[in-house]
Length: 102
Image (cartoon, rainbow, N blue to C red; front, side, top):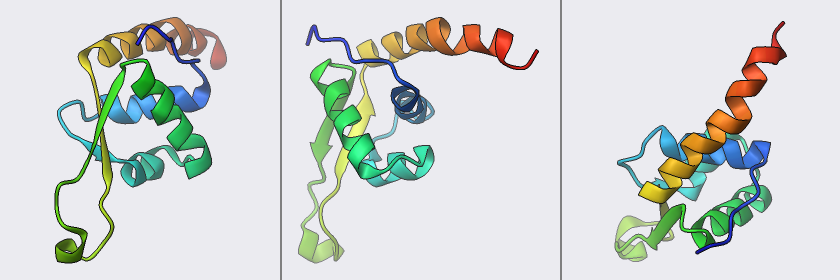
């Protein structure tokens, strides 16, 4: 849990999606639609965030035969992740806003 993920533009997008609904669990597909990231980019980011303790995930408990689709993996930002995301936004995103549109 002491490994810090790289903060890339794509990671910021994933964190922003998770931070927009901190009380909800989001499926990978929902995060992908929100961020417009391909699964080959999205899932490694989610894995790294989970390894760092910034995100928790779990499989749906519903029976796939009853719901008529495969189970989804659900993701939610942790308290540590929310704190780290706020710091990342302050360190990376906010300083760029000052210069980007001058």
